[in-house]
Amino acid sequence: MTIIRTLHAAWVNHHQDVLQQADEVYAAMRGLRPPAASGAAAPFNPAVALSRALVEVLNDSDPVNGGIGSGPQKFPREPILALLLSEYRSSHSTKVREALVGALDAMALGGLHDHLGGGFHRYSTEPTWSVPHFEKMLYDNAQLLGVFAEAYQLTHSPLYGQVVNDVAGYLTQQMAAPRGGFYAAQDAEVDGREGVSYLWSRKEIESILGNSEAATFFQVYSLTPVPNAGVGGDDVGAERGVLRVRIPVADTLKRVGTTDMASALAALAPHRARLLAVRERRAQPARDEKIVVAWNGLAIDALVRSAEVLRQPAYLDLATRTAERLWKDAYNPRTGELRHEIFRGRAQVHGYLDDYALLGIAFLSLADATRETVWRDRAARLAAALLSRFFREGTLATTIAAADLVILPQDDGDNTMPSGTSATVELLARLQAATGQPDYADVMQRIVSGLASTVRDHPQVWASTLVALNRYPVPESAEAQQRTARPSASGQPSVLNTADHVRARGEAHGALDHDDITVTLVVDKDYHVNANPASFDYLIPTRLSIDGLTDIRVTYPAAIVIKPKFAPDGLKVYEGTVTIRAIAPKDTVVGGKPIVGNVRVQACNDEICLPPATLSVTIEIGR
Image: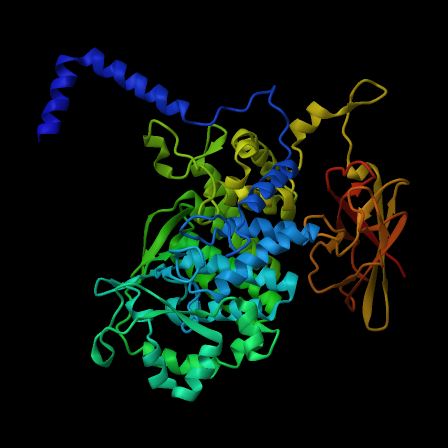
């Protein structure tokens, strides 16, 4: 009451002074916001910003203990790991691989990883990744699931494949809600003591495994002591510790006579199962049973990638089940509103920017994996709702409460997970690529323009934005194209376009048991288009689709390899006349009206790549 009376007295007796102070505070708060982009600002180049971020990350990597940063605590920093993965996928740089593998190995083999129950703890309390803060978060495990899946795809390391199955098993067995979706977290403490359910003494392990099997177990594993972690019972005062793989790892492999850590760990699976059975009889940490939409979006996306990489359809089924639950319970089709979380069967709290964006990304990944367009349609509906609620003043607010606030709340970068702004950039970029609708590109241009200054100054902080922009380049909007168009002989603007240099025609013929479709591209001299598959995942491959037909099998021609200056290892491309063939079921094409094909293609020469185009092809029906 004293504060309220004081404020009232100031408002009544010193009204003008209060207003002046309010204006000064407001001006100071506005001064903390990034400056608006100006027409004179240097052009923003995502590739250059990504290179700068990469230099910062590599300089900050720990060559001894692994991971990013050299402080007393170590966090996974998943957006940075995703940046390293993206760069290694395109460049195969030895330095990038060393930083990436160093971080992933340290986490997989250290105490951050729960070697018995699966999944990862929140962060390491010391530099060697041996003693964690024992809380387990869904957003960490979801992102690390995806990171290790992509790392397995790139490196073929059996250890990473084991980790993917380990984390997926943890999510399924410990974090899955009965009706679909994943819970938010597991606590670090039991009865006020952190980590007590996870700790072991050597004597405990020997009593469970027997001395001989325990000796075999400790050839690979060790216990890192945790101060003040003694237990009661027969082991009073015994030093207890966190289970981890023994370091140095090279010495451990030599000790067990192998060069393959994955096989050494697989051989001890029965030992770990026996220890886990005993551990589960202890008091367990509490579980936060909120189903947070954004974090579940991360989990869906990671499960889809894991299903593809490890060829595990069960993971795709789990992702689909989770997505259906969120759409049914957290989304209101009448209002277009998405709720932030589901708790005890009730959707609650207005959704934040990252809820809409990350769930939209997950739906697009499901659309790619299942070929079911309903997921793309749902992603588009989420994007529309997102823009109507959060897109203000050419930028993105993080909450719908922004309308009631003096200063628009904005993201200041990626932290433990992609920011809502970074996720929105990826969502819009992928929707534009999937639909070809220019509105998505126009909004992206405005968002990126507003971010350009801060991303240029602090590129590592915006790792997820840079990965998205380099993987899904922002197409130039029609307005921007008009501003930058080259003049023609008539003096009128003439926009460089892929369609000016690539032409298409098509025809269809009936065969004995199927229909044949042939689409021929003619690429101008000195230009080429990317092959399918493209050399790198950030390039746009040539792709054929047929309106109204999903049951077709498309065959792309063999590529030729060119070696431009920017890709000395070579690019797979098509030049000149290119023939794409497709097979459709009997009588689905021939005998009816002409059909329409769409060829997604991007023309490049040795200096530039033109904006991609979708060429519409009327396919004539032959005899």
